[in-house]
Image 1 (cartoon, rainbow, N blue to C red):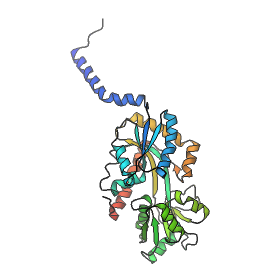
Image 2: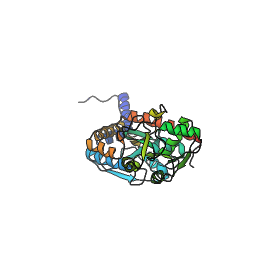
Image 3: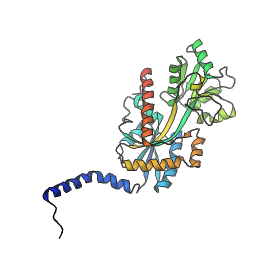
Image 4: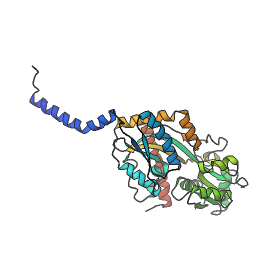
Length: 330
C-alpha cells in the first residue's frame, strides 16, 4: 500500500502543479514546435529588398522546420503598420517579423507614435544580412573621392546637390550623418523613390547621391555611375576596390542597413533557440549566400543576444541624429 502524502506535502504538490500550469503551455509548444504554418510579416509591399530577403529565408525555414512559412506583406507608414501588428501578436512562435534598420532603428524615433518599442516588444532571433549604401556620382564628375566632396562642400556651403531616398529612410539619414560628421552643408534632395534619385544622378541633375546599392547595381557595373565610397565599416565584396567612407577621411563613419528575424516578446526561449539554429544553418548554405549576394547584401548570422545588442546600438545612433535634426512624423 502506498504511503499517503502528508497534508503539508500534498498542499505543496498542489501548488507546484498549479504553478506548472502557467509555464506548461510554453514548454509544450516548444517541444512540438512547429505543428502548423508560421506567418512571417514583412512590413512592406511585395517586390522590395525586405520582401526578397524574407522569401529567401522563408523557403529554407519551411524545409528545415517541416511547416510552411507564409510571407504576409503588410505595408504602410514606412513599415510601422506591419511591425506594430507583429509586436501585438501572440508570443507562440507562429508570428515572426522581418526586421530592418528602417523599422527597428529609425522608425521608433522618427514617428511620434509608432506603437511599438524595439527593446520591450520584440524577442530578437538572429541577423540575416547587412547591406551597405554608397555615395555615387557620374563618370565625368570632378569628384574622384569623398575627400574631394568634403573639400568642395566646405569651399561652397549649400551649393552641392546630393540626392537620397525619401525623408526618414536609411539613405536620407546616411546623407545627414555624413554632413554632420564632416561638418559640411550640402543641398540635400530627398526623392520620392530611389529610382528617381538614380535617374537624376545619371542625368546630372544632382552632383552625388547616397543610395542603397541594388537599384544602382546595373549602372555601377556598366560604368554609367561611379561609386565614391561605401558606407559600411568594411569594403563591399561587390566593389572591393571602392574605399569606405571611413577610409576616405571620416574615421569611424558607418551606416549599414541590417535585416533580422524577430518574434513578439515573451516567445518561449526554446522556440527562439530553435529558430536561431535553423536560421544560422540556412545562412551557411551556398545557395542562400549567393541569393543574398545577388541583392548586394552580405550574409550575417548571429546569436539572439548579438542581434539584440546591434538593435540597441543602431536605434541609439539613429535616434540621436533624428532628435538633432528635429525630424518627426506625426
